[in-house]
Image 1 (cartoon, helix red, strand yellow):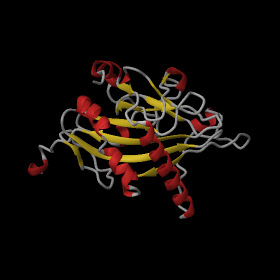
Image 2 (cartoon, rainbow, N blue to C red):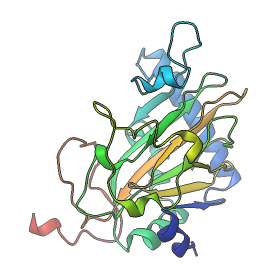
Image 3 (tube, rainbow, N blue to C red):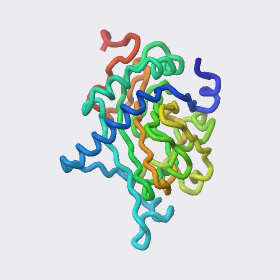
Length: 253
């Protein structure tokens, strides 16, 4: 059983070995194939956050190497493998412990940080992107490759979710670089097949990939169906699909 007390206290939870070695190998093959298909189709996948934080981090001016991260959204629309991952019993066992018996899809995406130039992400909350009526919403970060500090792993500020929504930098969605440097966060290193669950109020970011290895993750944003969006700015295909249990509100809306 997952350590729900740890999650409630810290706002995140690392669960080792949710996906076994054979499942990981299949996910790695399909991830690589999807990225190849995207390149062959000429699809723009580069999705590095822009803003003045890049120059302050030393990764955005003309004299230094630009970093990048590649992203593909709505991965279940590209391959049935990702649909099966959404319904994985081990994933949903933890999700139901953290969210309750009813679990609904919000959105999915794939992040790939290439070796040596994989971009960091400044500390932020997910709340500003898709605010909801309460905090029963979380990300399940599925590790396709091993993640270390050197290849740009996730980092979190334990307990930060208890502060509620925090003010962001003007004209951006990330937190003050002075008040919330990456150094303030704790790294969450993980192996392939491990999943990190974290609340959408938990302050988090990730480091630069300076290694010679990829760092690829699939991110599934999940919520309780009784946790309602406060705006319509982040509507994705498949949003509202029930992954476990029922939607008590479906017949009332």
